[in-house]
Image (cartoon, rainbow, N blue to C red; front, side):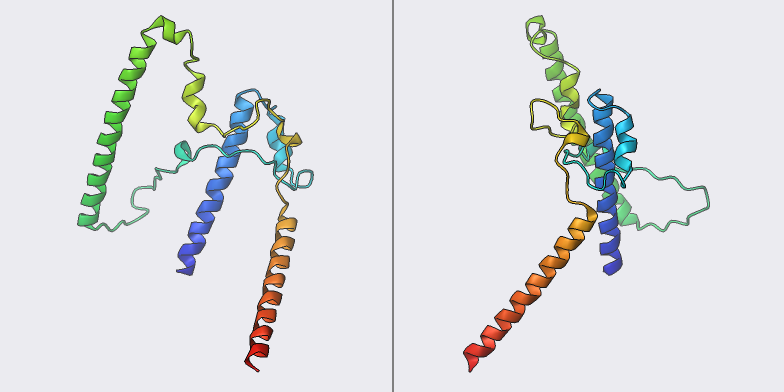
Length: 181
């Protein structure tokens, strides 16, 4: 159980790091940040605290394929489990393909009307769900944004909270003993 929790924790941490990196790269790609900001943010001596920016969507950032050299791994399969996985994937694929086809037809219908297409930006809106959510109407450069607590600050806060919890528990324990008398 402990090993599984550790692996899950590591996966979550790596996943969050990838989403943060993708977010910064999206900002660079959109021309909102200079590419040099990547090196600046990776310099933890100069920037020990991460700017408070939104993370990129996890949807396109999932690891879904790994390859191993032939004969490198001897896989063992449960036939019923494989049947269930394939059936579930087929059902999901069918559902999403039907929805995608319906959406494509609706978009084609709207795009065929020049009056409607003059009102919207076709390409920009397709990316919106994948980009970090930006609350401000004017963009604040990453290095000028508010910063998250540094690792040292988080450790200090954690220690302080643990100490106060222990003190509160000790007081509660003392109060219970005093009321028993």
